[in-house]
Image 1: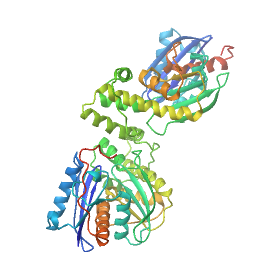
Image 2 (image 1 turned 180 degrees about the vertical axis):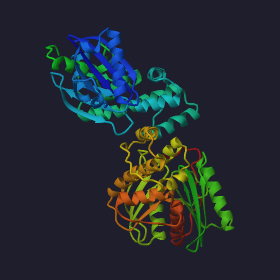
Image 3 (image 1 turned 60 degrees about the vertical axis):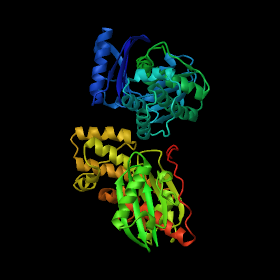
Image 4 (image 1 turned 135 degrees about the horizontal axis):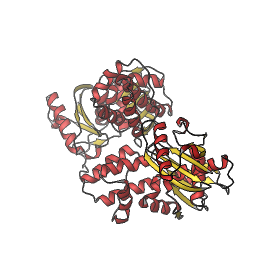
Amino acid sequence: MIVAGCDVGSLTSKAVIMRDGRILNSALIKSKAKPWESADEVMKSALEGAGVSMKEIVFCVGTGYGRDKMKFINEAVTEIACHGKGARWLLPTAMMVIDIGGQDCKAMRLDRDGRVVKFMTNDKCASGTGRFLEVMARVLGVSLEELGEMSARAQAPITLASACTVWAQADVIAHLNNRVPIEDIAAGVNNAMASRMAVLANSVGVERDVCMTGGVAKNDGVVSTLEKLLGVRIKRIRRYDPQMAGAIGAALFAHEKAGGGLR
Amino acid sequence: MITAGCDVGSLTAKAVILKDGAIVASEVIRAKTKPEDSAREVMDLALKKAGLEMGAVEYCVGTGYGRKHIPFVNDVESEIACHGRGAVWQVPSAKTVVDIGGQDCKAIRVDESGNVTRYVYNDKCASGTGRFLEIIAEALDIGLEELGDISEHSTKKLTLSNQCVVFAETEIISLVNEGAEIPDIIRALHNAVASRAASLAKSIVVESDVVMSGGVAKNAGMFRALSEALGVPLRQIGDPQINGALGAALLAADKLKSGPPPPLRQAQCNARREA
């Protein structure tokens, strides 16, 4: 039985094709202006790579902010539910998930069955979301990947005076003008991001095992500072790309809804 | 009796010269990189306008975020105290002052003598400050001082769904791409800034008369938007941008009446700038 999950976010769109609970293929694209266009394109790309046609998909679940605009889905499920489910699949011991999206962040606690029992989200303020890192990487003239790697080489990380993305950007520019080493600025940026997330995580209560999903999970500078702030190890996800958590969760829901037994 | 007030803000620096209870000169300049340079230049310009030398000023009070770096003041006062005092001098019936600055926003409750009884302050988040207007004006390639006039031509009410400046900028760019009219967008922007400032002000209970001070008050669209957001008419003041410097000059006069001026304060030119 082949099912699919499609997660259309503000910055990227993801699709996962699953056969009997195993991932056949996945795809990730930059989101387009219209969410239904993103959904069509990312789905097409995932299907092509899997060598599967749309007709073979028994059930498809959509999630993400564009979930109500997708034409081909059988059902829409909230991002929180999908991320919780996807994270549990990626790390079966996960009881807490911190997900950082392009324009939001979420902290969730799961029960034994992978259902979300408590969560907090922020989508009101760019600080603490992927957008914060994106703005800072642009100011520093580095890629998001480079930004994450720079923390490890920092000698004396700067401290940003304000959490606000607008003020922090001015701060970063001032540090650049003062010829502060870029690694020290990058580490300060990653630390600021981590401390913002720690506040969110603590507000739902930290419970082991903790894992991180979303694109920022690939930023080592943020992850290691967050570990220090929370006082726990964050289990690295190795089973699949952590950015796919939402789409994986959606595909797992599709599998269940289509009558598949595997969770 | 001649006193002076100097208000070094994040975007502009202001100076007011007061002689026997009347403004003889005022000046506003764009702030320079170093607050001490801004202070010197704006004060020199104001003195020149008044036809006075610095030596004629008997007492000078500094305020604003760069106040500790002003080299020629006898004393410094908080912006809150200065804005309160200035507003009550301009509008004696004022009970509440809302000041939207370049990088902050304050709401102040004052008694009849201009003493501050309550206040609330935001400099943590750019939303609700002049910076919000600046960023969007830049993105739309419009001069900051044109915003007010442009918003007058709005025919349709739009509402921004984002409060955060970063997200709102993206939203506004999509609105432009979708063909929304610029005047409607600017009006929505004014309403967004005003609603943020108004919720701050409401937390200390807004009592009439309400005065709006700060450079942003010169923007007629913002003035109207804040009035709407607060649900009360606002009292217009002469030059809202110099209100803080005026308050500083008035406080200088108060201090002079109560005793001889202290020596000039040592400016902290090398210390880290106060945030």
